[in-house]
Length: 321
Image (cartoon, rainbow, N blue to C red; front, top):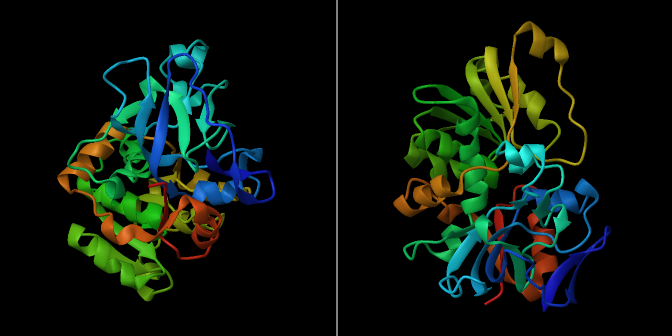
């Protein structure tokens, strides 16, 4: 099969053997894959990953021991825990020390014609949901994870810092759960994506942004930059919550005196609820049409990754059809 392989230095399209499903696993033929900021960070050394990257996908089950599953259109959760360690026995499989992670750690990902995943990781995509929307299930689930972690946001003010693909999803997810959201970014043309959802757009260098310093009970960093969390922290009021969604290879630096004196809660946030994300996409709670920058065939995947690496670029898709 054709696949994008990262050797630790560059992404290249190669011919590789089609994967063989292990016990409890299924073989999935990829239809659409999305390029995430984490994939770009892998190219910069994140997780010391080598292999086939990519973890956002929609695909068709090609082989499965369950007779009803072949032909089903699916998305998949990315963490594959061992099922036997203390973390797994406490229902914390997403933090299993022995886990593999699709396209990120120890398991080849979706920038390929086929991949394998445990059957228990799969979610069937409703017929009403197109591939172009369903490919957003994984990152949108990560956005909804915030509410799972910090509790109800109904009626609370929240600032989302970063108006890239993740920030646009997080802002909408928080707004759909009842938060009063301000999106702080550097691309004013993206106001048209979020304003119909009741989200205020604020340019990051504006007087309005400066006036909102230390005024939000919740601020979420979605910048994908090591400079993002300190910028988001500036917006958090005393005893507020700073949520860090960015995954970057470089170390982060936050002022400990500010965290301690103002009693700021710091929350790292990663993968989230797929069922909630599928429902939100199916009902139209979340807008994705304006989030796609460009689509490439698998043969153009290295070029697609280069484009996705450029500042300000939204979601770049890879298709295998």
